[in-house]
Image (cartoon, protein in one colour):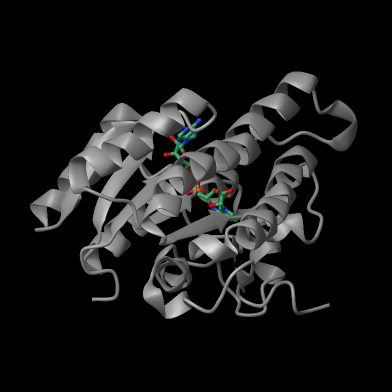
Length: 250
Ligand SMILES: NC(=O)c1ccc[n+]([C@@H]2O[C@H](COP(=O)([O-])OP(=O)(O)OC[C@H]3O[C@@H](n4cnc5c(N)ncnc54)[C@H](O)[C@@H]3O)[C@@H](O)[C@H]2O)c1
């Protein structure tokens, strides 16, 4: 077990890829804080982990609220005694063409995806600095590195993740806190699955993937476990692309 007795927070863990991270890190021995705005989904994930013999607690958290981010970290420490790793996975997506992005949609996505990552990381760092130990795993997207139609605002928030990752990594070197990012490709769950209801659109997307299919959330888990575990003690400020080969092909 690569995360035995580590305390790990996963934000946006009530469904989709975040749920796979929460269940997966628990299988690796972690005590998990499931953080989400979705109370019933989040509680169900915590219960699933507990029923399987793991340790988990659900904490209602809106990551765009600094107060909620601080409460989430406090709950981790109050429940499990420390905080070893934070996985900043929560995000929202509104699709609009570039000339129709509204100020409200831009602000909403920035608030959850970018500011949420900042606030949760700041709250976690306050504890990790005292411990002289910590891991932050940020979740970006291939769209932060190559354009896709209709996703400018969402992908802009995901590009911010690279800057946050490198800045936190550099400034926290002396506190033994490593900060890295995972860059998922199109995955057959969550927001991508909802966008793939049209079989013709799905076929077009799959056609651009050299491996020839969408990814499974479990295929992202290894990258998250690596960055959340002691295995990555000499790795910081990096991004690992897990995308079926999309970005390496032209
Ligand atoms: N699905 C994909 O193909 C794909 C591709 C690249 C990157 N990603 C990234 O992976 C992550 C997970 O994506 P997904 O497809 O599982 O998404 P999803 O929409 O299925 O799940 C997102 C979760 O975040 C929660 N959430 C939303 N707003 C929140 C807030 N303010 N505070 C706390 N929780 C909140 C939701 O309730 C939900 O449980 C996201 O960061 C996304 O950008 C996904």
